[in-house]
Image 1 (cartoon, helix red, strand yellow):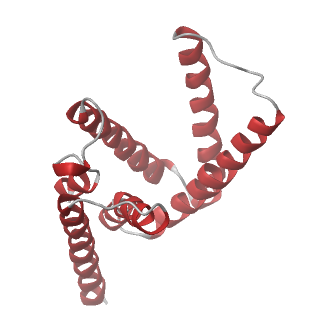
Image 2 (cartoon, helix red, strand yellow):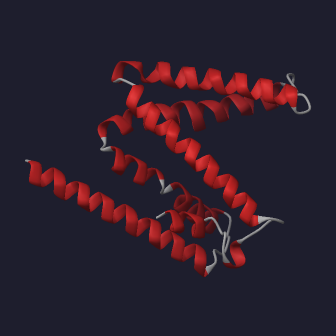
Image 3 (cartoon, helix red, strand yellow):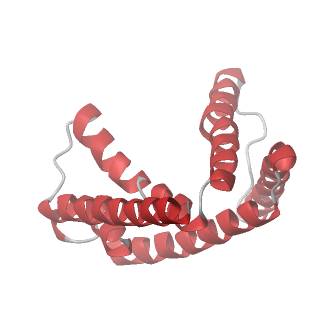
Length: 168
């Protein structure tokens, strides 16, 4: 499935872009490792009544790290203007706060291998959105990667369904 994620991201073939796609892929792999650790810890240390507290703590921590990092590497703009500030707030609420509250609630209800596998559908969704809304033409390697991811998700989901059915 990870090979499928890499292929769907355009690391191979004509979909690769930028001056150093392999370096970008390595950074993405490191980010995926951090993301996996975050999801593992979120699932392990979040109870149903404390999911908002966990998202709050992560958001405050991210803001502090962003502030410190911005100051260390060239400064930050704390007065972006009201229009930009409004868009940032909308993005934060819709794309992060609401999204992560839903993810945190759903991860507790799913076996960990199913939840983590379903989250790997994001690159496939990005390819589909690019195809439908942006008229992008994914490469054959990207389609192959999407197929690998979808096949892996189907296999994991079917295995989990069979285990649940046999346990009853």
